[in-house]
Length: 354
Ligand SMILES: *Cc1c(COP(=O)(O)O)cnc(C)c1O
Image 1 (cartoon, rainbow, N blue to C red):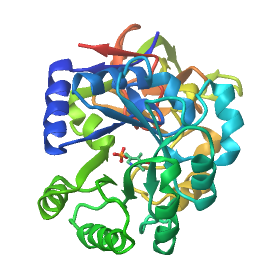
Image 2 (cartoon, rainbow, N blue to C red):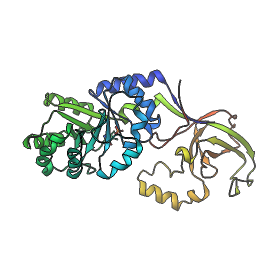
Image 3 (tube, rainbow, N blue to C red):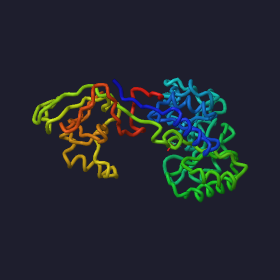
Image 4 (cartoon, helix red, strand yellow):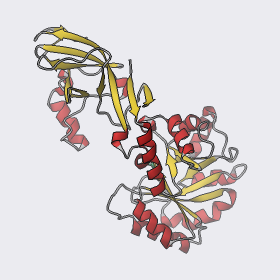
């Protein structure tokens, strides 16, 4: 029994190669759910693509990629002094000791800790962009530049918001000017969420700067037809309207079938408000107000005969129960149903290369 991610190997790898070609000098990003594929699998694919640097979200994720990927490992979450003890418990080498490890630094106190410590830890300096997540503001640039002797600065980093309109140019150019004015050594710039056209313009405008895009989603998930989530039908039970079932002995809404299928809350399968309600607050309200949550009458991600079907009750840990009306021919046990799940939220039992 399994919630399975099926991959059309040739198609997916063709798309990976195309994406890598449109993002020259790519730093492959593998984090979170492993984009549905899992960390080790993507780390091996990054190595196949010839990437020399792989970025993970957190220090905890290093152990998941370090065997499968032989190159440098960049941690995207900024280094914090209070993480040192925890990182040691995770088996992460102390700063400055692992030659493959590159820390992201975003505050003067943390930079000082790394600079004052033993060795010369490799770092990337994150700057405070319009994302307003992590990073040094422009006024810190002169101070940073003074502290770089105690570390090995691999470059500067800009994490930018998602846009498709090519609006990042001005923000990147402004930072390049600020760095130059502060006398910062500007050999390499890591950027996130620039389009291929923006990257090309930036590289040709600044031929002496090594521009390195950090790419996850656009690399692994660009071609939605190259992978497909499917769930096994584990049981099919014929029911009559009003029959009771489940932990809470709810009544079945009509004549038909209860399908017990692989994939539950443990996999990230959850009740959802209707997908036409896009903003999160409204979705939460719709879900609460509609009573969908209470009755389990929510649309499930499981597709039978071309249509997404209703949950018969809220999903369980490892399985879900879906109601199929009598008018639809029920699938056999062992059939795999298409499942409409987000790759950032789902944990698959297995990935199968077809
Ligand atoms: C997650 C992350 C990325 C990659 O994001 P995608 O949208 O998956 O390409 C790049 N840069 C930073 C700083 C990130 O945290």
